[in-house]
Image (cartoon, rainbow, N blue to C red; front, top):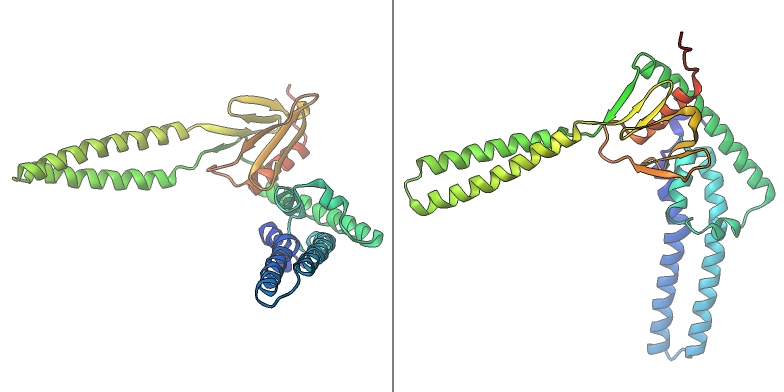
Length: 277
């Protein structure tokens, strides 16, 4: 399949969610409602209603387990980054490992899935390295910080409002309105200082990546020190030192997206660090 026809990890995840969880659940809810109505209004024996509902539950469970294999096969061949889609699924409708173990699909389809998955990830790696070489090769090191563009707009808005309140306080002859304006000004001033403090706190290096390693909130790890460093689900950085416990860092409100960070890590772990003289 050509690159332009591949779907995003989010779209692939949503498709799997509906196929594996939502539609079976919808069928069970409809069946429960229909059988309840039949038992109460149409004199259907209660035992028959219960037996029929249990049969529906069984069929929906089989349907769901069958759709796991179908979805994974489709996802591996049609998703830009199947790794991210699978990680999202394992955090949601495939959270319990036994579901994948009980998934109903044949040996040939499993092997095809693995081959398609490996082929797609090889293509992802190649595109990452090619893109990253153009994007980041001359930016050493790459520094990632918190986004605060939205806070700057908030700061501007607060300054405008405070200016208006201050003018109202200065030129309003009514004592009551002048008092209200004064109280609002001091409350707004507190909010302004809080916004400035937040911007200041965000103006720091969160992650720094170089040819030699990665620094996370001031803690530096050489690439050779790390047994694992990866972006999972597109929003979480997982890293683990050799014989150490895995650690996670949420990639929220950063100046670089999780996909770009994943690209960076792959690029800088792949290229050789220059030897020091």
